[in-house]
Image (cartoon, rainbow, N blue to C red):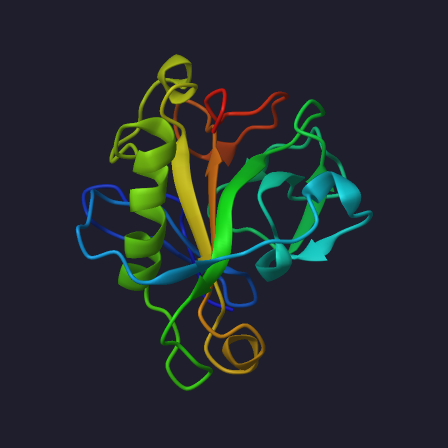
Length: 189
């Protein structure tokens, strides 16, 4: 799978190795939000063991079997480990669903994913996601955004138009996503 770093600095994208999920940070706002069908399903705490990243529903996840492990930002595997948000975790999915009008032959692009996740981030946090590295103490109010969508080919055929939007906290030099406890979402979100 294609994978892109979690945040683009100065408008450039960092590409990680093949075999990892397609991800990207949100850069700026977009007024062209695609039509998206809201997904429903079991919560992260109701699932045991790892799940494929495209099956993720809103909730908290570690990105390895060790929930306290920080994760190198430039590459994330295809398995998410559901966690209770009060337990250590790295990623919090705040929205997942299907963007209408896409099929295995017509997969999402980075722009489609951005246009699907950034407006939802704004709805939850009341601000646009960070576009540059910010100190950890500021990340609690405006965590970094990350999105996931299927790679072209078999994943796009199995998960047409699938989009997963999440948030995370990074270390101060933006090399690792940090394990933490507690939800990053504002109360009532």
